[in-house]
Amino acid sequence: MFQMTMQVHDNLAKRIQPIGFWLPTIIELSLIGFKTLATATATEIIQFLSTNPEPQYLLEYHVSSQSQQQLQRLLALNEAGMLSQTEQLELDELQQIEHIIIMLKLSCRQTYEVTQTS
Image (cartoon, rainbow, N blue to C red; front, side, top):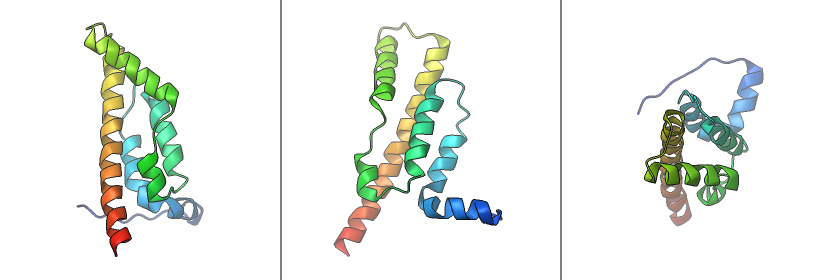
């Protein structure tokens, strides 16, 4: 794993210090380069992570019902072979987000289980 050191202004350091654990995920979500409405889902997740949630809250986290409905709509259109190019791009972006969250939850679950057994 790559380790990085950054210099930031004191004001920014105070704001990011509480969310330091979530910073790699926040950066990863920010770098996807969204071109669709999937940005709303990413923003929703980033806002959640910026609250520095306890591991059990992250493990229980689900995106809003609106985001879930949009994903279900896109999946149904995809299954029917009726996705536009823009909708396909949005589905791809939402699947990238889903993968990031699954990996984050897996990592969190492993860390949480280790701390619970110690």
